Image (cartoon, rainbow, N blue to C red; front, side):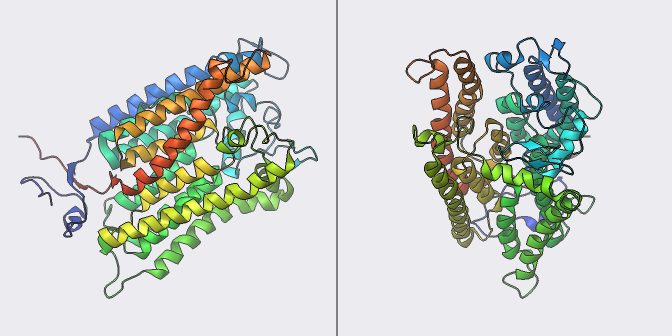
Length: 476
């Protein structure tokens, strides 16, 4: 057990949180000061600027009557590797017409969304609408959306710095942040997930982590519920959080006297998360049920096709063509079953570790569940990597895992669009004919193999957020 250095003030509840059991492998660290955090956020801002500049290469310089960039936008977006869903979806979802999302929308018999409905949960729909509100071109939409989302990316860097100190550079300077920060609308949901971890392990205000666990976990549940209303995936972290509360938090020390389990607290966390998600969705469901439901129907009907980038499409080639209904139906059944099985396996593995260390590793289990989802879901869009990067910060895994994943992700993030460009140009694009097709294979199967390994690595990794924070001694 590390001793607190003489002359160093322990912040919050750190002194009482110093572990007594030898199994608890925490340590004492100096937290980042304001100048260090400011530098971290500044570096993240530079990376975000690079990310915007990368996508902005597809914008303009000319625009047609619908505000679509030209010339040759549809060729450039792939060949120049500057494609973004933000710019592309300016046309086709009534975004350019400034239609308020969902209320008047629906899904037609061809599976197309119309009337303002977008294929994302409601808070992302609001972000899309807000980004388009005062612009009339896809370039303006890209810029406005970037300005709206950049603060979420910067806040994520700040929170990660408070949680894991300089490991937060993995987020702030990561290649995926350049590739995907403004590819889709991921930054708000990533902030929700990271903030949910932050409030559990650092609290807020002057009391900080001195606040009762159930209070901190309740706010975390609200954030996870909001995350669900952005992009769904933070909802899977609710179960590990429930188990963390059930077992009394770190070392079981936050259980009420005489209790060995906090069942009521666990249920409360679940109800708050569900209640938050429902409360956010209800106004849209009431105002336009058909349009609200259409976004979920669209995702449910999506097939494992060439745009899905998943092991399901590539593992069943050539039988996985969208027109092969029997294979697509099998994938639609097998994918969620195996995803749920991976969730159960992660939670059980976490419980085994809890029996040994007396702290349920809810962040590690959440990271492993995320790996299971990314590996086994029928859709694996490139920008989903942004969901995973904070887990590289929050858990102490070997640097080789991180570097290897970034390489495989880069191969996918670049190769997929070069490959699409070759297909569109009717050039030879088979695996034996095209380097871009080979990059796609490296991306698909490299990520898949690494996700299997990371599933295990995360479950056995030490936390980077459980250290006892102390303030640096004042200089004379």
